[in-house]
Image: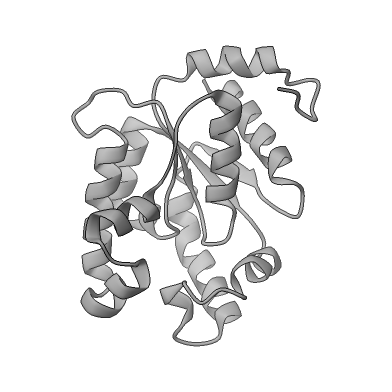
Length: 193
């Protein structure tokens, strides 16, 4: 498999994959690209990919907007915490995978502590214009249904930044191809390990 960055070759990626002994968990705002970039990372590293939101929907047999509408955010966060605990290996057994979390998951103190103790957390960050371009046209974001999406995103980003900043790795996700973001993450993980 060839990648656009010859300085980080397939052989270098394979060496890095062999050093990864726990989940890589992508955290950050909705629309930052955690799922799309996560799938690319998983393919490059030869690791399984998992989306926490998809796993929550399977476990609840409901969509996330339905869970929010019927039970509220606190109930959702509790279920999210249990699902993420399972996905990062709550029993202490190492689980090698790439995991994309929902935007609010890492903000929950218990979930954040769990991720920081059992995984490598990578904060994917982005500017508000990029986030708006990515989420503004979707109706499946419960937190954006209660007012002006730009104002809500701006407020959430500011409120959540201190929690996200606890992730040991931060990578900007902008208008570059997701492949470039994935390679930047691989380099950051390589330097961090």
